[in-house]
Image 1 (cartoon, helix red, strand yellow):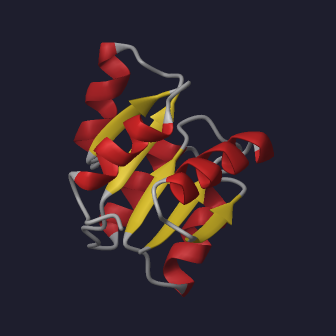
Image 2 (cartoon, rainbow, N blue to C red; image 1 turned 180 degrees about the vertical axis):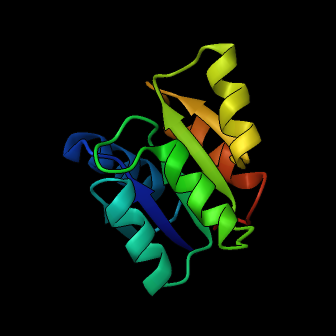
Length: 120
């Protein structure tokens, strides 16, 4: 399983990567913002995308919208501190498959991943 992790915080990318490693996912590509993520998405193939909402250059919501406009149905999980109902609805309408609020435990992430792919 290959996962693209988009978050402008290097610390958060490491936390997400460690959480993925803890549930058996080791093929991880990191993106520093939404623009970096869309370029990596275009250049490669991923089984899952985990993205933050608030990022410079291109937000997570813009990233999701662009990926869906490309016709991709790759599962996308928004991992963010943005938890207001209106924001969750906006993310789902843009094409997010699931939503995880920060902070989270590795088991929470695994439960989200298990909905879409078989994690070793």
